[in-house]
Length: 290
Image (cartoon, rainbow, N blue to C red; front, side, top):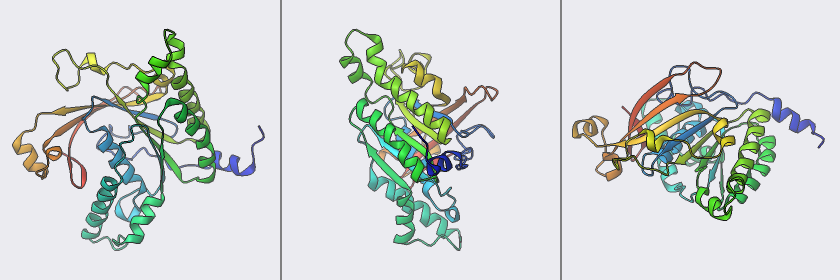
């Protein structure tokens, strides 16, 4: 297929590097570079989607409010995206920026609309739809050179459905996700975007705890996807200590009384093996790190 001048420009233009997207999550200078994939892995209820909201807001917020001011595509395969929650977090961040005296961070509807204009949301209800979405994503990347981040929540949503439809053939069970991984690999190479994707653990630890363990940490998606992943954020939920919750200024809501832990590791061949552990709670204003 012949490549137009606009497509060539979109591919070659330097997109925003997201290495500093959240220093509290990754080891020093160890964040995702151009063309890299971060997998947020853990059991249900371990803060993965809230982390995506946090990263999304960091990207779409204006620089005057501490954001990166880049475009984001959010692929919602679980139909769990809560726009009211997202707008609430954005509103809170803009309020915080204004209260610190930042002269350009004026809180009004125009600024909020500007943030949301940098977000494109796509819903998928099957792995076939996800595959089509990724095919058409190239057009979006061509027309929006400011697009630097692709979020997928979650990449494992159709795992059991694909296994059921694939019958006894292991290759057929993994066929669609493998094709999705191949497409993502090409988009990463040609357009140098960054990808964050959640992946639900399908096993619990033998003790039944939601804490991380070798039993529930094991990757289970197809090899092409596993080869794409350069960073892994292993998410778990801890029992809450009253003094920690008080220090964090947690709200009275149940979700704010929970403490979550993230263990970040890098498998990129260009980096030495590094690891970092961080903790956060979820408040009305979004994720708050300790």
